[in-house]
Image 1: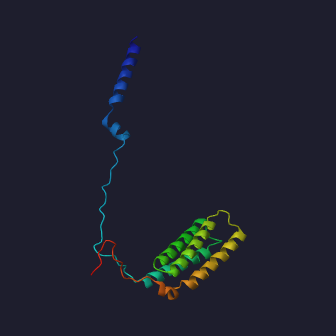
Image 2: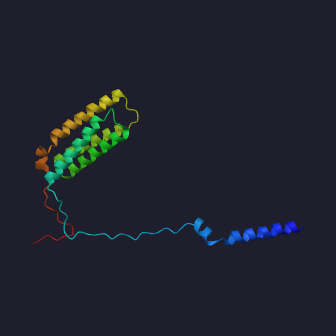
Image 3: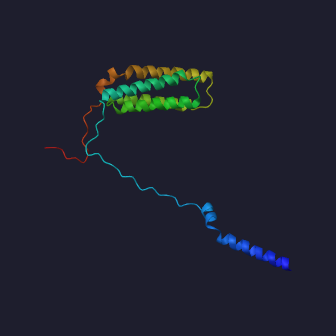
Length: 177
């Protein structure tokens, strides 16, 4: 009888200790509240932004980077991993879009068609099964696109279609009389 009483008292003590617990145990198992970041301020420019370099220099840089990315794509078509091919294709598309942003008129539209063709090629490169015949077809298509862009959108040929570096007035500004 005495043993049962001690067991009952021991269970009650364990229950009381478990429900009240010590502070270190509570800190150990209770999640800390999440820290909410304050919103960052938005800075507005007082003047219209003007790039540091003129459009010719920026277009030439985009053209050079596109050429390097396209060369990487061609050279690693058979040997590179799928991720590396996709990264080279994405980089080439990004640089072509940068070139298109600096052009205006029909030249920009033609480059848009070349970008669409490059995006279709990038979709075909995502195929996990690229055997030799498919790679040969892709290689000829990529080389033809390379020659077309290199010949048509070189800086010397596209110089006449470049946008001027004069900033455009903001839409809410009133015209000067």
